[in-house]
Length: 164
Image 1 (cartoon, rainbow, N blue to C red):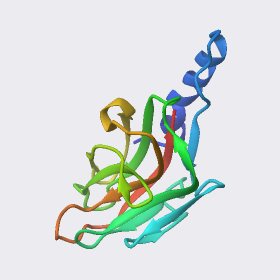
Image 2 (cartoon, rainbow, N blue to C red; image 1 turned 30 degrees about the vertical axis):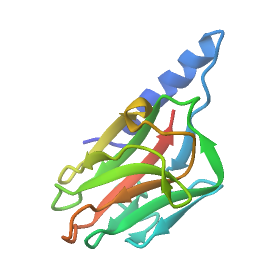
Image 3 (cartoon, one colour; image 1 turned 90 degrees about the vertical axis):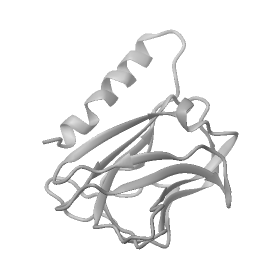
Image 4 (tube, one colour; image 1 turned 90 degrees about the horizontal axis):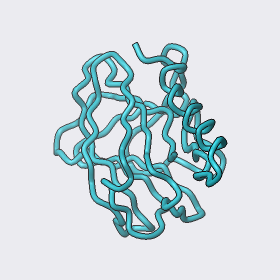
């Protein structure tokens, strides 16, 4: 079982490592952790319940009909160049096997590749995506999660979304 301590385990080490070096990478940028962070909001047209109680965490519960999109958005475009990884922690709920595409946008324009993320039944899974794989071109203001299928997905949960 992946709990809050396990989800955040790699983050402290990264931060301390950065402090020890002469040239320091950007501090991690938290988007969602038991609630949406200041400067960010939830959008899209997928059903969602932020701060849904699930064990010792408060993820956003997402329910997607076919082709639905769920987004984390910010009003200040973000330069991802100082970051190396996008970390997202997902839980597949009672059924699991949900699969969605994740991408970055600036306004309505997609500025990255789409990558698959899969949820596991009944447990948390930490997904670390190298930003070099997303190939973000320039600034972004939206992290988009999309059901690329006409089929409805069972509810799944997202927590600890951060750039590091």
